[in-house]
Length: 219
Image 1 (spheres, rainbow, N blue to C red):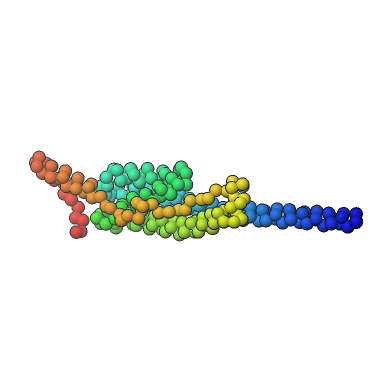
Image 2: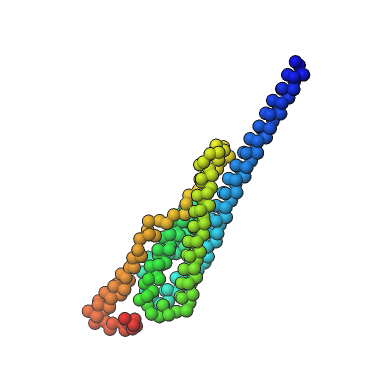
């Protein structure tokens, strides 16, 4: 009886050891899987960050070019300058919000440029516009990949058995790169700078001051 009992205990002990090893292997696989998915999310965000920095570098040249041709309100250029700084500083959420607002501000500049033939014909402006639009396309493309990776990562964390270990290992869900409501709205072009110029002309005419000659806009 004793040999049989010892043999049974031995088999039970071996079974427990095997079970522990299987559990440890499962935990390692789940942990490594979550790490891999999180790394994909971080890599996709790094690619977005690269394009945000590229846009950051292009904006000063655009502002200087626009100033040379068009009479934009100072508030527009000030807003673009402020948002430019925001896309490379602060949290990821702050950068995403600033990027969406900046996209809308740039669209407004490009729309108003249609009223300035000299600016529209400027080779430098064309190149900057193409580069900024190309950067925006790349951000949109990487945004799709980023959101796909976030979905995959979050699903792995929120479904069994990943959800059992995610909290224990300190994994947290990531946010999607969503378009802000303001970005979905149509671009509103503000021509108050032009009307302000017309009012100045009228005041100058009323006071007897010769009205400066305007350039032919081709309209």
